[in-house]
Image (cartoon, rainbow, N blue to C red):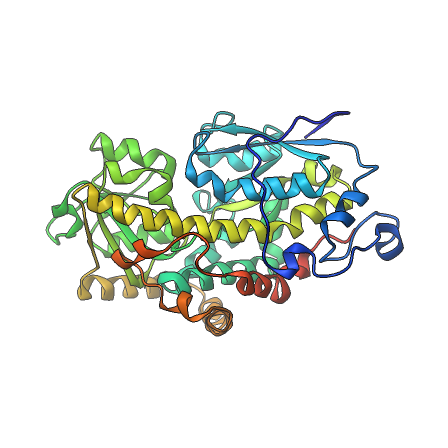
Length: 424
């Protein structure tokens, strides 16, 4: 983190109006010291004017970060609205120095190290699943993430389950603290993260023939077991390196989320895709975290703004994930690719593999119960259009902003997130 008398402007700011009362500031502007004490904090729901006023005496802060995609890539709109919101509501006191195309830390699996050693202040792309020995609690949570199910509703349930368990799991949060990070969100809330997606170079591979042992790029222990259950041979390759592996023929298939398939541009090299909303893979969480040293140095009002603005990030991630996923359905068809589902026997094999993942029945029962609770809550927060949105070719009909997810975001804050809001 750099402190400057005059901060550099944020690259590519895009103004964002948020439609929920919670995010737009449903309460009246509060005063910092009168209501929250000498630390200078604000109540949740404080409006833009209150935040700008609270930042008047705060020194400018530039946060170093990077985005995996190149400048101008449409997937950057997952992150830019959040960064824009923080800069605007801080009155320009918090800005971001963005390295695009992973220019600062080329190896995606080193995000945690980069936050700990000061190369980055903030990252949306920490991958604890690649180091299960260092992050055993995160790995255990990833194992049970398939319980949310596939499709749109299943992905929202999975994200809520991950948020719930991380906020209420002191051991998991301690893993991040011990590694020099402050965890804000345990998972990028991109849509269709848990839906089974297998992208292959050719149609024959996408049939998943029993007699072949296809090399498939996966990440995480649970995903490796799932690939083996489908008759494939898993190899560990980060999502941002899978394009080259498929292009060179090093691997036959990859098993990203549909959002990862889109962001990685894999349609060019793997246009034959299995998308099955009736079956779910375990999610490999990509956490949103801040360097612990940076977090500790920030004033309370800055921490609260970073926290309160996550609703903008969640909303953008959902909408961009669906919009890009809709586009990729058309791209697959234009590339003479194919879209299919798992066979009944493969779906059954996947379910059996999930049962074998567990070594702790108590954890499985707790997560299963939590997933069921969240499914009821999520379904009650969605309108009919969202509940009826299907996965696969029909997804092409989704248009940006056509579904309102504000009630879902309110649900996450009120049920879980507010329990971890900074107050000191």
